[in-house]
Image (cartoon, rainbow, N blue to C red):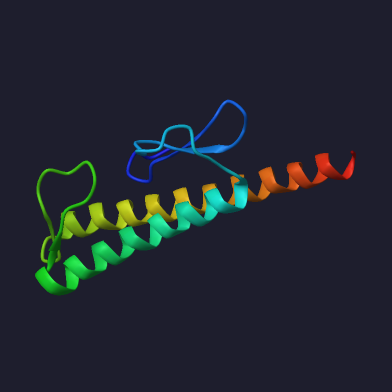
Length: 109
């Protein structure tokens, strides 16, 4: 999982927030999905605000700013945004499957 979002899947199947001042905090699947979606929206907001206000943006893993006037930079930005969307979709799928497994396990009790 991406370091910028700070979530990892713990040994017990719960989401654990990394780099958190309160260690070993556990979240269930819906709350983990909420945290990831919230981080996703914050990152999209940051990118959009930088592009609108400055015409360039810094993305994770890039030292230089990406400009809207350079086709290569626009391609990098497009790939970065597609990667963000793919990670969000993967997290939603994982959270949905995990929640379904939890509900199925509880139904069998």
